[in-house]
Image (cartoon, rainbow, N blue to C red; front, side, top):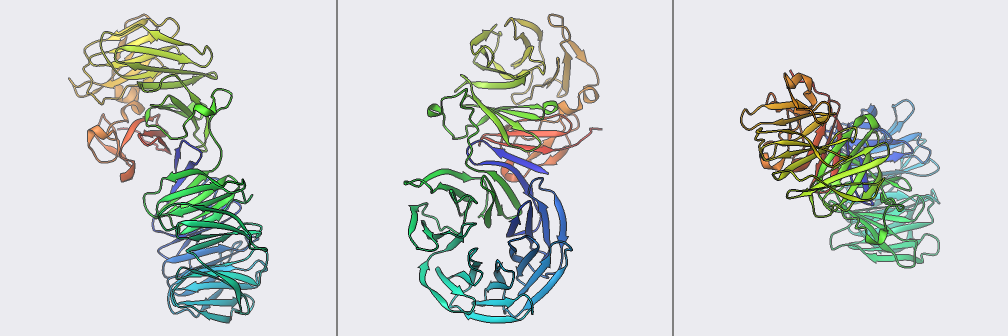
Length: 547
């Protein structure tokens, strides 16, 4: 299970990677169905992202899926030219509908469960009688039918999209005026509104009066997919690999968020609740929290906060507290919940435009350290004051705060220094270790590990009681196995994207190509947390025991 999160109003709190999945998916309450290129359909739990079951029956790519309004039935359309109706309690096929000459691009079931509509590459819309399994009507079109959908208000009324035109029909095949030019259409959950996308322009209309509720321009790209939030407050649109989130209830509709996180064209998207969105593209299903700001209003003036996500300078993993902390170059600090991947809270520190930033949370007290050249600063939420620590004799390459909040460790050009957070004085130094420029500094309590360029090995020291001479640790690969597990992912290394055990040189976890350029990573033997220059955070379970 991979949980991927990013700061901002559109927060991705989970990403599920699925081999062989198509762009077909649908949801009902806590259940999501995803089609595969193999012809199978997998059923996931939307809360945990875990797979519940697999439905087998199609012999080619599953192109479209739709749940019945009560979630008891699932309809699927496939490149095998077949439409199937599934019983969600048993996982069995209720009926198979055959009659299309080419791939079935879209399927939908009416609110009264009596009729299934299917649109195909064969340029026809078929209406199927659920009870008898027979095709009751065929509507011929001039081009492939990309989309069909029943109105939530009227089970006898449905719409179709074909060749850039949108038609409205009743189940006796009579066309209902007006006809629209558009690439996609979606009804609100209650059926009172619908959104029409016309290339890059968008119109939201009242279903009864056809009055235009909102009208706006999104992008120069072709909009392929759209949906309403269940509370009718937000319209979300997909164009290429980008998601656009629009608030439409005010007199002046406005863009809330632009999300660029998928690396290929988005295949579909749907809301699962007023604030949670699901999107899919080429083997990746992403779960988003929409329309909620992670900024803590008690600690920040929102007028001075940019929602853009700055590069991450460091990551702190506090698995025992169930959190990971990202420190950003713009001074923002975000606390992430490991089980869900959601951002718990954000703070703004005075650390903007500095480097070697690191933060930890001790008994509700946020402590942050950073430096510029040889100058070292410390700030915490309890005192709200900026202090300086005793200057080291050389520049600092990395900073880490001890888990108890008592000590700051700094990796310098030739040494490792330790400062007392209480007094600001240097309390311990390890000399002449000569770390490589991109060597990590990792700590566990008052034990510290880094790599020596002289020996090429990972070395560790126990700083013990503050003020005493640090004692070198023997057999560091066994005393601190999780602290060897950092190399191989920093862009300076130019290695394959993955995580490398620096003691053995073994790559123990491979990352997708797009996740290669990270800023920092921490691993504790169970969780790996990686921060990126994009501001994104990757949280994943990664159990590994070195030899």
